[in-house]
Length: 395
Image (tube, rainbow, N blue to C red; front, top):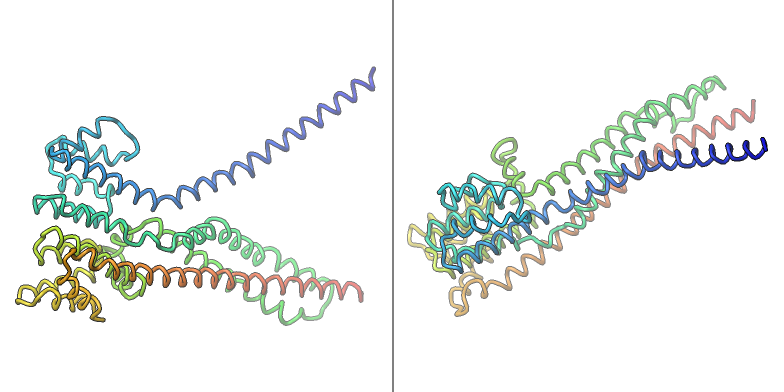
């Protein structure tokens, strides 16, 4: 009977140990991993959710315009449904509209509801007195650059959140704990000097840790720019880094996307009957790039001097391609947007090709560099370990 009780107690203790181990595994491994996966999903979906929310708002606005009611009253009535799909900022916009503000003023009060280019275009349409003219331009702004390098940026985010912190931690642990321990063991076993290569690597571990930290920092900056989107770059341009827009203009694929956004917006506005100077100014503002705004001002100055539009746009595009394409579009009967559709598709394809090639080259280069650093440390560690074993065998 006593043996049976002891067996039951032993089984109970074993079960409790298993359950405790499972709880510790869930608490310290499964839950953090699930939290990291959820955080990664949220970060990856931020730009896409931002774009979809803007498209949904344009759908609501188009419905309100088609209904013939004032858009302020229509949007305020839509917000009364308490639909959460548009988020808190849409209801904040509706609150400003209910207080008697116009749509443009309300958008200025809620700047994070829409991209800056879309808000600027809607305010210009309000000044023109017809939002129908600018709604296609707003959709062109949202469609520009949808190809992007989202897959490569997703890969960068995975590197930032998972591999880079682990690599920096392991490098630091190697420099602070493991390398000094190997040296102490080797010096305790023999008076001979350690091998040249491991000694050189371990004496420069701080440089290797710094290189790994710089790689992690570069990945973090790229991820923040991707997640922050145009609003972050606009904030940097207006404050800390006033040369961000110039850098964007110098990057080939970004310049093609800016040209595409300017051309498509200008075509839509011209088809909508907007005057040429106003259309050029609005198209420059819709790029959200200071360089494009300066070039648009030069085009407007030429228009004010009596130069034709197809000649004035030479100030925007140094290559001259936009000039002759716009000149051909002026003679087309189906409108500017349809006449320039082929060029817009070409710009999108070239920008996508260049951006994808650069993104994969950068990410692959960073992975190779990271692997080289790890290989140097591993080779040095195993070289010193082999030397210790050889001296131990001789001793």
